[in-house]
Amino acid sequence: MVFGFSYEMFDDAVGREFCRPPDQTLLALAHDDRVGRLIVADPWRSYVVSAARRRPVRLVEDITVAGRNAVRVRPHRLRTDDPTDLGSVERSYRRYGAVLGRALARTRGERKPRPRSAALVTYNPFVAAFCDSPWISKVVYFGQDDWATGEGVVRWWDLYREAYRRIEERGAAIFAVSEELAERISPRTTVVPNGVIADVWRPRHPEPGRIAALPRPRAVYTGTIDDRLEADLVETTASMVGSLVMIGYPGDARTVEWLRSLDRVHVFDPVGQHELAALVQACDVGLIPHRDQACIRAMSPLKLYEYLAAGLPVLSVDLPPIHGVDDERVCICRREEWASGVKRVLDMGSAPEGRRQQFIDAVSWERRMQPVVEAAVD
Image: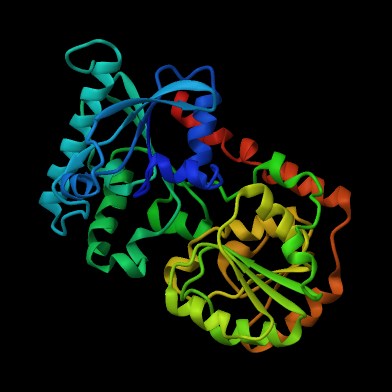
């Protein structure tokens, strides 16, 4: 089994404690006895950047994933960024497949990989579409984001749309985090929304000391802190609660600076999963005050499931993946009605413990990833 991230590396999954869909797919494969040799493939990286950072350029290294031995492959080329013309992208990912094939053969003590000898599970649409090496027995593609509408990758939009077409054409097993994204990729797509790490969110954690002194009611936002936030909605919330807690990776310096300038707003850097669960449980409502963008409408907000796993009511703008998750505990409202929405969720209170535990059971990653693993090993 060969597993690949999108544009992240294995180190990134380790650093965030395996909390996102690709990380959990990898863990599910590692835990399955039907999976033989497990190869973990990083995306293309640059020889030049690695040399400048004095990092050794090693193609293959031994790693441990969920207690089992695995092999990590680190393919390198001249540039990290993908080319912007179709022919160059095709050649690049054919070569990527050849690199993975050589690593696969090395793990078996063979000179070259045997035909159709391993399944490829990947979150990278270019890998799923253009990596067509003979060693691949099947392809499983999981779409976590709509790359064809991402604001930071406009130059590649047409190539991503072509990749979606090729993935469908080659008969790959296709999964996506939302119905919206599934419709953009292929009518054969199976929807697997985000989930939670049950062992992290199930316990009731003690209230962390650094949040205990913050006035209630406390609203919380988790995730990357950048310009996806709708400024008016954040400011309205801050004016109506005792504390607004923002926890996550600072993706945009100007947004962080603006947040720190607001009264009652407290910006926390990323924290480990157990501390995150404790911080969210110590709040009163969860927020999704996002802008209306095509790429955002295709996401399955991980924060939504974490808020509900913590027992919080949720206030969100109207995004397709929000609907149907918990119609009683999630308040979806128009932007012009946000203030009344804040009042409504503040009146809801925490979910009964039995309901909270049932929700965690329903959205645990272990359950979520079952169809993906079945598609890979079948």
